[in-house]
Length: 287
Image 1 (tube, rainbow, N blue to C red):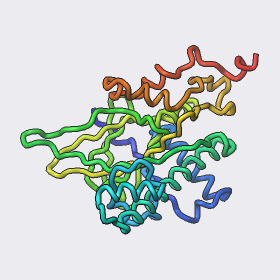
Image 2 (image 1 turned 180 degrees about the vertical axis):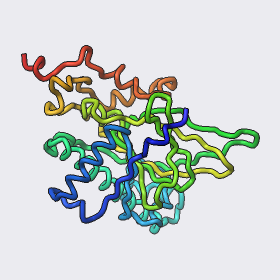
Image 3 (image 1 turned 135 degrees about the vertical axis):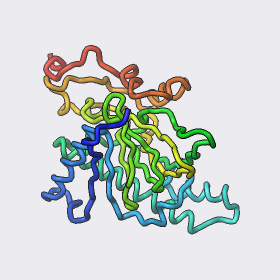
Image 4 (image 1 turned 30 degrees about the horizontal axis):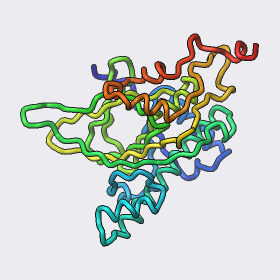
């Protein structure tokens, strides 16, 4: 079912003048980011810090912010080495990590929390994905709908549309006409759990039409082994009782991917793995 034309996907410009923490511009930006993540679970961020050249290069690298990891990958692809590739990918990965952390900080500030409330050790994995155009005789083909299991994801498009998000039950919006300097930020299931369900983890899919292949780069935040996802007590009250128990991220990650049938998931796996039943408020927890 197509989406109501009145629903507009949020586009938020990160202007350098508004990125100074504590300013009016910063607080307004934090509010927009929180509202977008609560309503849609994602938004288009216009962020021209990353150059077009860096957006155009990418492969699957396990820890793109680690220069040695990038060099090891380049050595596999080009035994004689490829310094320009290494420098470009490492620089892009580092800047995408900065963007992830910037958005996290905006969410923290918008809820009035301390920085330690969303502090963890992690690896940022970057993947380049190719989606084939439909075979001759078929009008559309695509990837199954799912929510992301990493904490958050940033997607870089190549101007070929295909990414769709579910904005209401059964209503899908195709993201089109994204700016060349834009990225799409997506809330993952662990970030939804951290926020006590205030943030929405986006159910999304890729549907291809036309005769052109689509490429995209995605940067995922994967917490290190032993990381516990925990809702800050400030986000639990009578109006917002605790929805999720504290849980080990890696156990949840393996739970989600150990069975191929679970990969087609619209967010229900988070509830199966970590839901508190019935939800608990702070008042009840203090008794």
